[in-house]
Image (cartoon, helix red, strand yellow):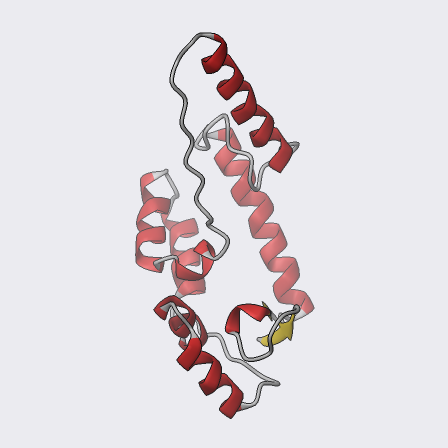
Length: 154
């Protein structure tokens, strides 16, 4: 994995975006698995009908329109309205693989599919390249979240 500076101060870890270097074969495999996983989730009606991320024909504007419509409807009916927005931009980096595998079993994955995912996720590691170790240590000292440290070290 390489860190690409996306702007801002060079000694702040959040100023960098991790870029994964996968082989073409690995990218094709992940794309095929992604398509099969989406097909499985759709065929078994596992995702919420309002799911917007990672679904066909749904974008950020889809969920924004739905939320806005709900707010306007509540206000028109003289009801109280509140919203909570959570930034999950780095959520994937902190997914517990054991919990993810349990979820796959719970939604109906058969043994073959489950075992494939289990082997694929087992002992996965990320490595950094093209980054000065001294600068990395300086950035880690300034990092406000331990998750950033664990992201780099796992």
